[in-house]
Length: 258
Image (cartoon, rainbow, N blue to C red; front, side, top):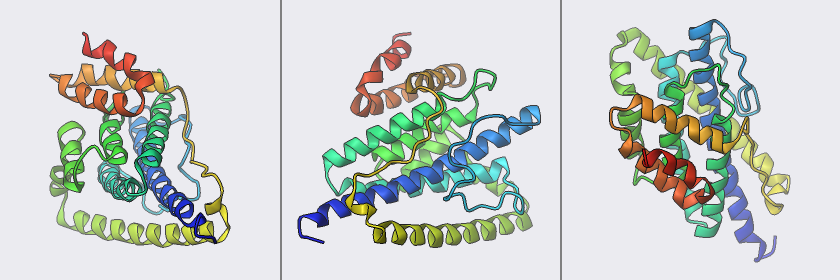
């Protein structure tokens, strides 16, 4: 490796870590989506883009996911995404902004694939904490938890309502899964670096199921229907969209001008 190659490898490695963290979020999001849809209709026919692939380490048969566990999982994965994105921020603003733009567009296009037959629900609410995490729009991990508590669900409150034996099992299961994920992700990272791919143009994972415009419309429409005063959350979405996806700002303006 030459001296000129070193910074590029660092960027590639940082991007891979963030991409992996983003995929962990999408895995949890798709499992929550399926859990809610099965509860509503008895089955789920929505396309998955990350579940069952190389970074999905959870054995859903041995330990079936529940809505409560998935909310806790999503909070943890959003925090993980925030921490990985923070390391990418140090690489340089241009590379950081380019990556955030990709992830936000990819996330919105994932939401765009939620079919019309599936009514919007709490899954839509996760857009804000995920967007804030990857774009470093909050100062620390406590802020991520606060955003989830304010706009999605109070995971701590839900957890405290569980019986002690269930809480203990949830903590142990969560720790085991976390350790397994870290070990396997570390092995994949080592394989990635040794393969020489770190010296090639980075290939982001893709989770597109529809269009970013449809996804953003769906999210904002649900916010208007759900929150007593949707203006604060819409303004926060507008701030992120204006900064990283200005081509979609007209969609937000449609809702802010109501």
